[in-house]
Image 1 (cartoon, rainbow, N blue to C red):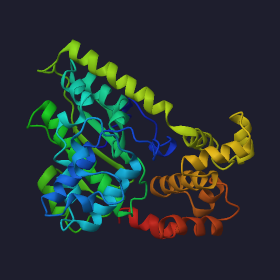
Image 2 (tube, rainbow, N blue to C red):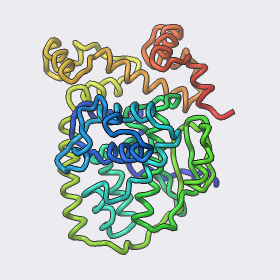
Image 3 (cartoon, rainbow, N blue to C red):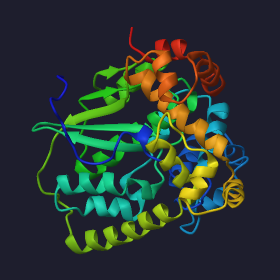
Length: 359
């Protein structure tokens, strides 16, 4: 399939330049954790083992009052990778994510008047469901392209990054078939990591060309703009209103860490000190440090996170040299950048670039 010329960008900036949602705050439905637990339970793994370190018990996953954080989701993914005897487990767990698992978000999609309205809604309100990946959508006259990036796991050489992508990709296919019909299919999938040993599972599930070692992750499908059989304006309005309230709550509870990330992202290479940020936020530096400590982070951790995310994007998607990237990230020389990158990822910038680029 030819690459689209000048696609129209509907929503979302590049994920590297967006602040990820709060890692600690418990405000999302446990539906994704429930899917992972159910998949592993089918393999004979006790849910207690899958939920180890989360503070959650299996009965809580079916209660509508239960809320989870990204830290708990992160722990479950790590447990699943360690416990599963199925290397393609994330792909299979994602197939459990039918559209009704998403609550009001799912019902809003089902009751949208048109597919175009559903697409716009899906991207605008996606963060209310605590997704594995952020998404951006572009389209031309015949094709839809959905680019997606893991929320908290940006390194494509990490198993947890691949897990998040596989789960999201499979879940998107399942939920869209629920909404559009069983005939729906991807026409092409692009992934930013090398083909895993179980790549044949991708072929079986997605039944389309799969391209590995790409600059980013995305899938494409034929554009549909007809009316929706289950369209209902009253149901959609009610569900949208509830999602708007949830999105507002998420945006308000990002914490001081989210404010600092935004400031750092806006000034790559000229990162302000914590004293300068405190002045900008009209706080004393000591009070700012205390607030960050209460959120389980620090200025040093946030700066390293922002630098790592940007470095990964530059290495994957540009031809910039290590010296140029070092300068862009505020390092005095390429050697300091190289040492920092090895500390973040376990790989040198050159090895990382080789591992994530197509031969």
